[in-house]
Length: 148
Image (cartoon, rainbow, N blue to C red):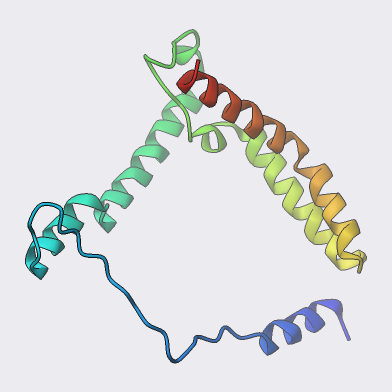
């Protein structure tokens, strides 16, 4: 049997099951003397992003990323106070996207050739080491910016 068919058969046998006696607890914020459902719904609406907000954020990130990619020289030398690209690095950097695709492709290919999960984990660790170093550096910079 083909390895792909074996994986498909295994995935079909795995199912998510939920406990039928699940108890759902809700949180009602009563700090401001509000205790009715209408006030809680308004408060929730004010605190959480709705679908249109998320779509707007996604479109704005896409447009900003294109602008930076197409006009990179325009942004050189700007400080982070003038223009911050935090969170857009993956979209802006073709090199990062290519490394990510290559890592995914290599790990998936390794899964077809290697049965030992520990060896596959090593392949993944090697292929994602650059991303890990970048993330650690960015996290350290953020930490030191907040706690100088």
